Image (cartoon, rainbow, N blue to C red; front, side, top):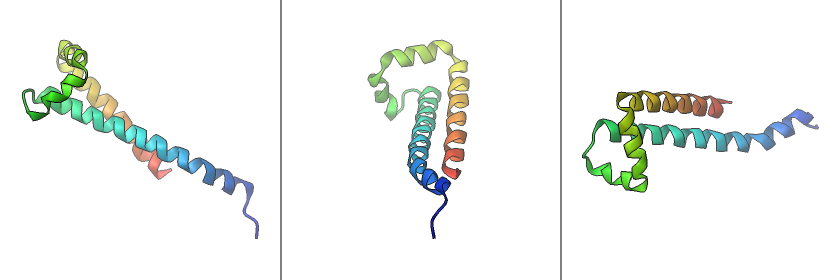
Length: 87
């Protein structure tokens, strides 16, 4: 028995959604890491700021709002990743 044409198209695009879900999950993880680095300065992970020292200065210049910004972006990435994985 033949499958409907829509079934084939759904199988072809399911891989794309997996990549989007992984991208948003990575974004949420990086936001969580940044929040941790901003809230707890001077820990062992501070060496990560050497990858982009200007980012540290930019986030510190925003003060408390940098944590609010990263929390908002991270939550949006997490929700989008979760909904993309579910379908």
